[in-house]
Every structure is written in C-alpha cells, then in structure tokens.
Length: 335
Ligand code: ATP
Ligand code: MG
Image (cartoon, rainbow, N blue to C red):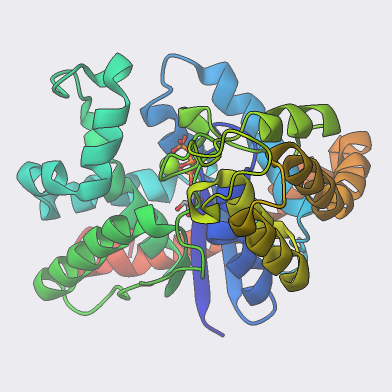
C-alpha cells in the first residue's frame, strides 16, 4: 500500500478552498492509501509565533472539521506535528542540503512574504529564519513518513518540488534512502475568495468556512463580488465575473448551474434572487457536515483519542524512517 502524507496548518477552521482544493482528494483516497494527516502546529507557528493560543485552539478545531467532512479515523492517522520530534531532527539535517538563495526564490514563500507585510516588513526585511525555512520542514514532514503522494492545492506545488530536490540531493550524497513524492492537485486547484481574490485564504479574510452558521453564510454571500457592470435587476451580465456564479458551480447541480448562467447572461435574473438561491444551496451542501460536527463538539474526548491514536502510529513510522536516515548519514551511534 502506498503512503500519503499531507497536512493543514491549525491557523483557523476549514474553508471552501481547503475542501475543494485539497480535501476532496483526501476523501477519495482514504480507502486506498496508508494515510498520514498532519496537523502542522509547528508550521502554523512560523507566522503565528506571537500567538500560540490561536494555534493550540485550532488543533482541535481543524481536526473536528476534517472528521466532519467524512474522513474516517480508522483509515486516516491524524497526528500533531510537534509530537513527532523526528520531524524537527530531519529538518536540521536537511538544512544543509538547500541554499538560502533557493528558499528566497521559492514562489510560494515569495508570495506569502509579500502578503504578510505586517509580520515580515515591506520588503521582507524582517523575515525569520523559521519562516524562510518552512519548505525544509515540510520536506521533513513528507519524507519522515516516506510520503509518496501529497494531495494539496496549487500553492503546494513549489513546496513539493523543493522537497523533491532535497530528496535527490540527500540520496546522491548519502545513498538511496528517501522516496521522491508527487503532488496530487484537485480539479479545482485554486479556489477564489468572496472578494474575487485569486485565493481564498484564512489570512486573507475572504473565506466561507464550513463551520459558518446560516446567518454568517447569508451575510457573506450577500456581500460577495458580482459583475460591476450589472446595475439594474434586468441588466444582462457576465457570470464569469461574478463570485456568486463561481460558488454556484461548486455546490449546485448541473441543471441549476446552466439555468443561473443562462438567465444571468440574458438579464432575466436579479443578483439578490441569485444570492438567495446560492445561500440555500450552500446550506444544503453543509447540512451533513453540521450534523457530524455537532456529534464531535458534544464528545470532545473522541477527538482527543483520535489524535492520540494517530500520533502513536505516526511516531512508530517516523522512528523506523529515522533509523534508515541516521544509518545513511553515519549518525547511527546506537547500533
Ligand atoms: P494560511 O492562510 O494560514 O496559510 P490556508 O488557508 O492557506 O492558511 P493551509 O493550511 O496553508 O491553509 O493549506 C492547507 C491545504 O489547503 C493546502 O493543501 C493548500 O494548498 C489548500 N488550500 C488552501 N487554500 C486553498 C485555496 N484557496 N484553493 C485551493 N487549495 C487551497
Ligand atoms: Mg497556506
């Protein structure tokens, strides 16, 4: 059985970007793979080091979200990154195999530094060693479990590529030890935000969260960006410039999607009606999730046990891998 390693940062709840960008593949693959799902608290701290409460709180929140979309804890090992010290050890070893210049050139790191001016300064002049190095730590996450497939969104591509480079360098110096992982993108590899921004993100304040209440969903959709040229109810418009149509395509059925598109183009559909229909479809889409989430909220000890069991399994696998790595690097003093 092949191994999957993937992860999410506990910096907030799951949003539609996570769900359609990455989690749909988790759901598809959980039966066929040995699946390790990392709650990446150490990585979460790289740009939240000043707010440890936020990261701690969201470890459980995001685990509950992931269980409530239908991931099965008897098939997926949910584990907490900081509880696997082998990952930190590997990060140190790999830090010799990547140049600082290469990390600065990583497109995902570059765009995230630009987004986080309040932490890293206008020109990225206050970037920390930890944040710049997070792709190295992510290479350690993947290879610590011999991850072969990494399902994720488009922003993960440069990170998996960086991991592959580190693996090749490691193997060429220390002998064939690590596997080169591959990324698996979903059909919707980058989900847009309510404001029309290219990426829905926790840090961008433009997300619809799976945990949002009916009132929150309604408020957010009512404020979503639509075609600015449509002013009156019966103006024809371009649905491809409208975030309401964009989300209809994610959660509605084919017949309704065609109807929305057609009526919008002809000018026989007002934006308010269209938004109300989307609110209804979104609530239908979320109803299963809400019911499952309630069970975990009422039984938090279930979640603690799932994390403890998954972390134990992950630790076993990480220790086995570490023996191989240390032997290859001639650090196997115990044997
Ligand atoms: P942050 O803004 O704190 O980085 P995030 O919303 O980007 O948070 P992550 O935990 O960094 O979330 O990402 C978890 C997974 O979800 C990754 O595989 C990432 O590629 C995917 N993902 C996140 N946002 C989107 C999006 N808008 N479209 C597609 N995939 C996404
Ligand atoms: Mg991110």
